[in-house]
Image (cartoon, rainbow, N blue to C red; front, side, top):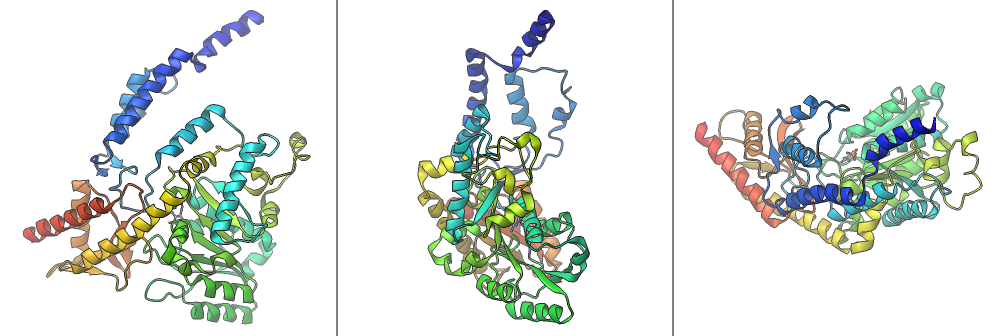
Length: 482
Ligand SMILES: *Cc1c(COP(=O)(O)O)cnc(C)c1O
């Protein structure tokens, strides 16, 4: 038996490269990523080539072996040469972020040491580090002592986790679900609808509350809807506010919403996945007033703090409500129970084994402090305003009546003749074909509308000037054709 074991051991040895083999592997990856970063300022933000990736499918996964050189080359041509380039400052679609370099080193570290941050017993340092980050974010939004949270893979999962916590805090059992009501606006992110479905709350009364002309929930309409429900014997359960909607960056009147939520004993959840970190900006503090009165909220470091994809957070005013939803015992976990100096991330989350994702935020914060992040957000606010006024001044363009609340600007061109939506779709195609900048579109009041979202840390004044130039070129070329 010992001989057979040794044989298998020898074959498995490939998984533990030697010092010099590691050096060889590392060099290929580092050389490639360094080259990638050297060119990021001039590389395209978007390349349309749906053929890419087919060679990935064609390779015999599991039986074929390739050298690291071949693999790097394959990734470079099959992945990095098509689609959106989210690392580019020219990425101005959806919600960008960029992905700061320091986080990649934290991920490298986390992957090599493979620390387990699910349970205090398993790694007190890793759990303290992640819990510290959550307390830091809780302080940022003004949550009181006793607040807690969980680091998730992103905002959608964080919204799901929050809605489940709300349901459990309310003790909302199946039979009661059809008698409960949820309030939100049509601007709420679709991950809220996903969360409602996943939490089996679809049979609640879902009330879409009217908005003002800047797409913010109208508190009076909310109050009327809630009172009507109460009179009808329906229980107001969950109020979902947005602090930065994806479509236009609207921030609901959070303090008014908190008043109503408190009065009727609802759970007040705020989706600040996109907008949350703008609370760091001096002139925005007042706009976020009331955020500290919510019961739960979602905030995405992979958006507003420019961390590479894979880091969201949910914060909850009372830690006990998180445990109600997610704390369980098991015989094979009996050693863990005695060590409770910190809340185990596992006890406040649907996850157990997870990526040690806190490090990718902690390391950059320790390196730089919050200063450069704040500066970057202040810059983005002003860039959005700068773009808004530039487009507003340009003949033929229609923008919102008010300058952007955060860093999303919606606009469309209204041609002298012909259908505006068709024209704007053609403009978007032109921009995508050009590829130096990328933006996406949305529909506002049924109108096809272009949308520029500025949140990559690599987007600067020259990027926005370029965006304006590309837009002007598009209008010129398309008008020529008409
Ligand atoms: C991006 C976004 C989400 C979803 O977050 P992911 O990290 O993409 O899962 C939720 N709400 C808002 C307002 C968002 O902008």
